[in-house]
Amino acid sequence: MKTLNELKEFFKMDRFVCYNGIEIIDCDGERSLVKAAIEDRALNAGDSVQGGMLFTIADFAFAVLANCIHPVTVTSSATITYLAPCRDTAFITASSQEISRHRHNCVHEVTVCDDKGKAVCVAMMNGFIKE
Image 1: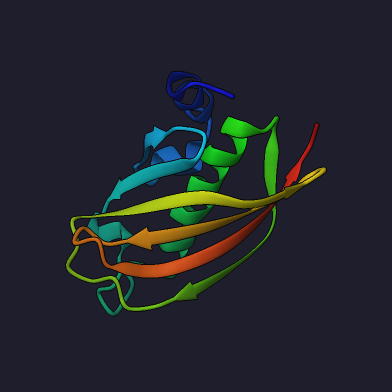
Image 2: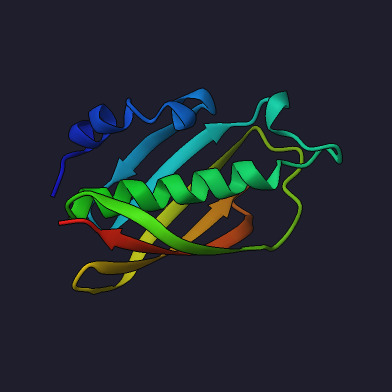
């Protein structure tokens, strides 16, 4: 299992995540927590957080936990359900929890919340464990 500092160092190379201001808050091997400040560039035409931003933070929460507890792991498939518009929020968080692992496959459930703790979407992320 990788330490929090090792994960932060590894993911410094994820340029897309860095560009979007997403940071690792915690990862204890059971759950990961990541956070992003919401800037104007993250909003869609309806002044809600763009669905792509919500998906990106969910995918990153998955990546942090999966790569903490397994060798190099990549997303192989994902589904996301948007529960409510994400408006008037200073930041969003995403938390991932592994619910299954078998050989080279893992499945995580990820919840994305606004700054009030309201769930705005949930995702099921399937990963391929490369080693």
